[in-house]
Amino acid sequence: MTAPETPDTARTFTTIGVVGLGTMGAGIAEVFARHGYAVVGVEKDDEGVARGRRHLEASTGRAVAREKLTQSEADELLGRITFSTSLKDLAEADLVVEAVVESMEAKVAIFRDLDAIVAADAILATNTSSLSVTELSTATSAPGRVVGIHFFNPAPVQRLVEVVRTVVTEPGVLDDVQALLGSLGKSPVVCGDKAGFIANTLLFGYLNHAASMFEQRYASREDIDAAMRFGCGYPMGPLALLDLIGLDTAYEILETMYRQGRDRLHAPTPILKQMVTAGLLGRKTGRGFYTYEQPDSPVVV
Ligand code: 3HC
Image (cartoon, rainbow, N blue to C red; front, top):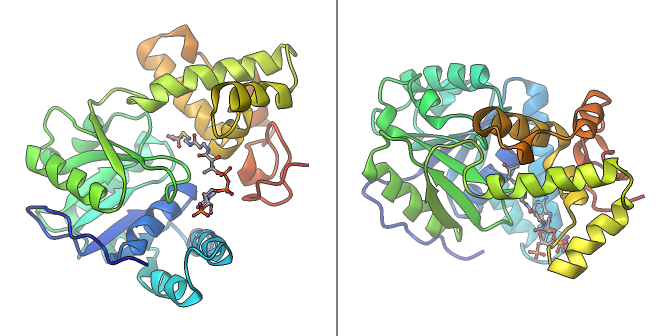
């Protein structure tokens, strides 16, 4: 493991809080722990903590199997992460990244609580992909320290992170977050607070169209995916990517973007809702457009 690069920031980052240890939250915790930060991961109950821990162990186990980490480096990485079911354990955090479900109500409640727990100069960030960062910031007493930090799935692998500024985010907060992310090997881009930001606005119209093409039985799932992989050089096809993102998450993102922008491209194609209702959420439930032997396994049956 290489020594962490010290970011050129006005504030010192030592402890990072991550709220929500689902696919994204666990990946975000791993990114920071890999770079030497003490991470406090908070979930709502013991079951959530156990799931987050399993996710982290599976991911570091894969890195060991591929000889990207030694077993002792993986143990050290995991040793930097402490788990909790109480937001109060984030009192020492210099930055907290919230990564719970895409529910404004749930996120507002967390931001309101965090505002009273963390130090006055700590940064509060949300990993939301489509909800208003501005609205979330108003749940706190200091909206200037609130920013969007939007990672991409799988967070340990994807280099892009969107840094979302609201009209009141302090410039110093933006600078420090970008420098911090750069030191983690990420490529931050900055954008304003609009549902979907840059990447999802461009990506989800395409994913929605692919689901619609499948729904109309225009082509098989394999051929739709093969067309984009082998014709356009995408690392995975759109239907496999929807399974990776999670159909529930994808549906929520499309709904929010459609509600805000009224662009027909983003009106969720009916099959997405049907699959979500039927519990076919993609890799995480073992079945989406494809069927998976294990939730995180790329093996398609
Ligand atoms: N967690 C951690 N690491 C993972 C991983 C995971 N879930 N899945 C794969 N990896 C790692 C592997 O360990 C491997 O690491 P190494 O190069 O250090 O050995 C590397 O990623 C490549 O993995 P594989 O060889 O198994 O497989 P691929 O080369 O096919 O890559 C992929 C898998 C990284 C998922 C690649 O197919 C890809 O980049 N797909 C596109 C993903 C994408 O578009 N993500 C964005 C989704 S949109 C989003 O997240 C926004 C949100 O708001 C919804």
